[in-house]
Image 1: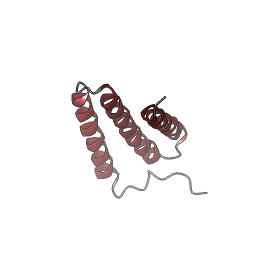
Image 2 (image 1 turned 90 degrees about the vertical axis):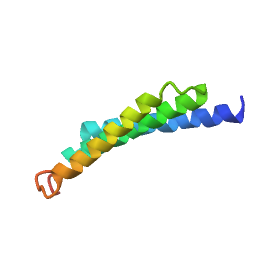
Image 3 (image 1 turned 180 degrees about the vertical axis):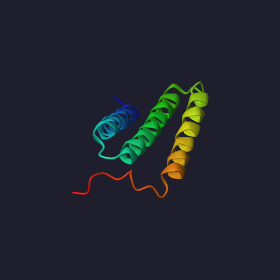
Image 4 (image 1 turned 120 degrees about the horizontal axis):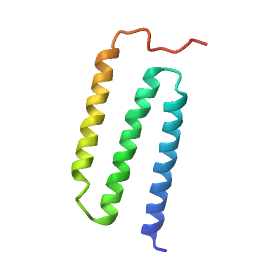
Length: 95
């Protein structure tokens, strides 16, 4: 095995662990805002995974998918920031 294989394996493991933790945050998250932020971060992890796949295969076939996911993540984040500004009902139970 070469160093490139080890680095690739490490990247896949890190992205998989991040995706699992974000899925747990989406499921458990005490507030709606936590769930939305975790979903945005999960989209970013998906983008990184697709970019890693494109780099390994040396293919540009996934560029339209990457651009679409990037725009989706950006518009989602801006929408959440716009519509939750000043709202007090997005907080969880203070403990």
